Image (cartoon, rainbow, N blue to C red; front, side, top):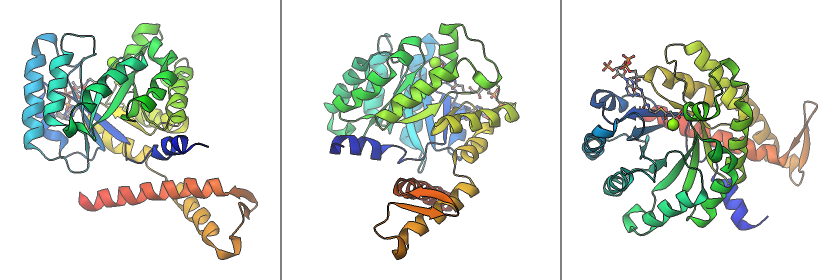
Length: 306
Ligand SMILES: CC(C)(COP(=O)(O)OP(=O)(O)OC[C@H]1O[C@@H](n2cnc3c(N)ncnc32)[C@H](O)[C@@H]1OP(=O)(O)O)[C@@H](O)C(=O)NCCC(=O)NCCSC(=O)C[C@H](O)C(=O)O
Ligand SMILES: [Mg+2]
């Protein structure tokens, strides 16, 4: 394996991104609330939740909010309008002024979109650590997900995460919203695989019905089983459930301790395969266990801070 490939894979899931809450940048009341919520990331949306004639107001709100509010360990992300819209230039000017943790590009369909934005960011020294997230939410975006993900190689590895947008994808494909997301699962899996191939995080789509927490829990469990790192959220009521479902379970934590402990045992030094209670455990499982325990440490540290 090349060192480049190793670093791409190692990069995956180094941040906690269980709960990624979006807030319309014209809703100052909701924006004022985000600091009190236990979400891992907040997206300040300048795109679809903001009417065309209120884009300037939305930008002013984000500027004021991010200049005056600390969000602790929570990642701050600005979702711009699409790069081919008349709003994008001013959206990017805002991004370069406030320097959030990441810029989220909607409706990405081609690698060049990410590369162009990466180039703009690389011209600004102050934007050195600023990451790019891409929404995959159109048929072409899904079909090109692997190519878009691989564009991270040629864009300073700024591309950090995919976020799936099922509202747009359902609109474009005609697939209706339905429990289980049966006909959307192949598309979702394609996006997860593309993200994994290039070491990106991948965030599941929003659930619109924010009052039905039972259905939401089922969708979180499904998303986690599909390999997503977290979920995009639209309402504070969804934060705790997302943190719970996308955080490691007690069973997974106990198993990780068991596996890590077994491989740390000097009796197993030099062995790549061992027997734990009648199961074959390989060293790769120890690597997975270490990653999970690192996440547990992050979650514990987060709890101590709040
Ligand atoms: C969906 C909502 C419009 C509902 O808002 P509201 O009617 O205010 O709900 P509640 O009365 O239940 O709210 C209770 C309190 O919580 C605050 N609130 C609500 N939503 C948020 C939020 N997202 N972040 C922070 N705080 C929030 C309310 O202000 C109330 O506070 P208080 O009065 O002080 O008690 C609304 O939830 C909403 O606008 N959600 C986000 C919508 C959004 O961002 N949409 C764009 C992104 S979705 C997307 O990207 C789809 C994707 O592109 C795709 O294609 O699928
Ligand atoms: Mg969308």
